[in-house]
Amino acid sequence: MRAIWKGAVSFGLVSVPVKLYSATESKDVTFRQVHAKDGGRIKYQRVCSLDGEEVEYADIAKGYQTEDGEMVILTDEDMADLPATSSREISVEKFVPSEQIDPMLFEKSYYLEPEKTGAKPYALLREALEAADRMALVTVSLRNRMSLAVLRVRDDVIVMQTMMWPDEIRRADFGSVDTSEAKPAEVKMAKMLVETLAGDFDADDYEDDYREALEALVKAKIEGGEVKRTPETRKSSGEVVDLLAALQRSVDAARTSRGEKAPADDTDDAATDTDEDADDTSTGATRKTAAKKPAAKKTAAKKAPARKTAAKKPAAKKAPAKKQAKKAS
Image 1 (cartoon, rainbow, N blue to C red):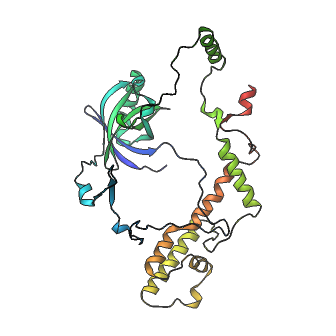
Image 2: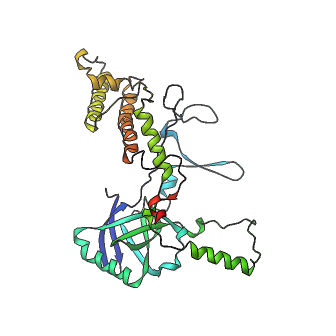
Image 3: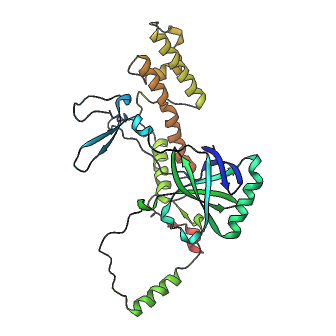
């Protein structure tokens, strides 16, 4: 894991230097939009809706559209005047009972790891939270914006969960819910059903059957040779080859900018493969193509299905569903 933020938790006069790690990750299988005929990637241009011209990133500003359709342009100078904060402090405001915080407010979870000098106060805060059965309500600045968050303990590790602001939670403003009282016999039967299905939650009882089936489908197509070879495709055995290709592009770009021609013996396999990615020989276009590193993404796409075998779960299984072993028990 790689730390994404460093700072300190402060409660009272105690300061705990910590590192922040993302506690969750998406396991969804990602797709790219391609031309069904040849597998070519679909590209999108930044085009102005008024003059039809392509717009450079440097000429793009933030715009706020009013209710009557007018546009308010906000410049970088305007944004710089907004109240932003870059504090490296996770400040404990109060310790609140866990049941007082609606889980709907929770947004993203992070693990807090203590620095070496903060191991003792970290343990102190962890034990205090567990003993009190409370969450620490904190304020923290992430990406220059102040956020609410809570600290709680999970598996002997302090977890920080950022929260949405209360006015970001929408009310269930619809009238289709029948508020009439149920009959006593119906209530009794519903309670009986609840008791019949009662049990403890174990996250290991559930798995994403859809993702597993999709990964198995992709793997089967790869093993069956159903792969489109495009000019952008090149096989790679690791980052070393990608680095070599990037270096070759950089050398070619430098020579092109000086008006030099690449020597004939300098076009090895890596250079030949990487040259096919560039349609434009200008310095800027070559550097941008190198930054995309399509080979690394291609390799990652191939590795993803290999995490679980196709035989583990049939593709036609409903999702989510309990494992067969658990059901039998």
